[in-house]
Length: 231
Image (cartoon, rainbow, N blue to C red):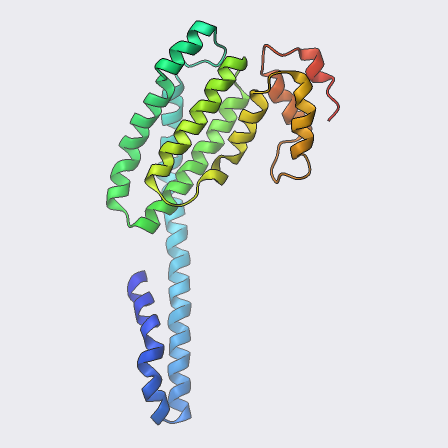
């Protein structure tokens, strides 16, 4: 219906120019009003469809993405020894599990849905994922090697998601990117530089309290130094 209306409205003006040239002003006015009404109907239908698709994603994607994340994260940790870090680099179970489950969920939908509709659905699904992933990261403990693994996990999955759409997805994972920036700091002395490079200039950047709390999740950083930061 949306495509039919779009094609119809797009063709009205050129198709009626000749009629308007020979018919009375009243007829031309009625034709113009009809054109505007069709354009208004197209806009309303588009809004209704967007809302419907958003609700569909809310019902189907939110819970599914949460389950995929939870099941992929089972027995995964981010406090790693050197040996465990090398094991993860060689055999990343989290990424493998996630991609397998994600593809099984989203692949059939991509085949069934029109391109623009799928793009919108995928964006909603990834928004739900990002929200749950941020929450999981804030509740997790890290050391530097684990933080490097998380940063790599984020990059690899973003690259994978980009295979399904041409729509830019970077903004969906901006907050997770900030979390990775904080968690991968080598030492507490670098924290203030990172904080002041973002605070007040980067929209949506975390508060000073959230920044400190996240740093405290790094078990290999000195707690007293973190708490003493002047942000």
